Image 1 (cartoon, rainbow, N blue to C red):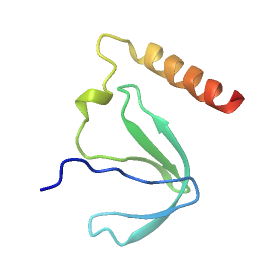
Image 2 (cartoon, rainbow, N blue to C red):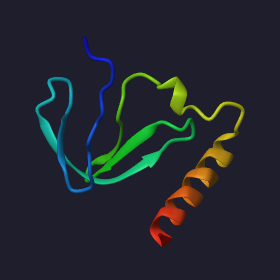
Image 3 (tube, helix red, strand yellow):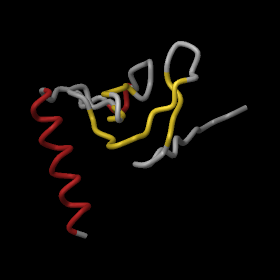
Image 4 (spheres, rainbow, N blue to C red):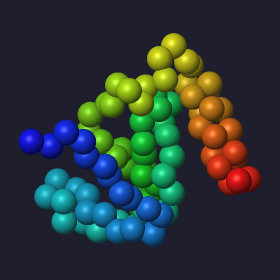
Length: 81
């Protein structure tokens, strides 16, 4: 029985999307949407990483602009290290 699952997707990877998961797209960027959920930015547009919403990634009582501001500040702090 699986207790934990880690998704290892990096910029530059190719993933399969579409109804039959047969259309390859290249990952250009990975961002968070207004609900704190991961979104893949590809050469063809934005795609949500999960079809469901992961509750522990949700920001709680934060507004969408606060979530984006927090995400930007954490990205900047990682880049400066």
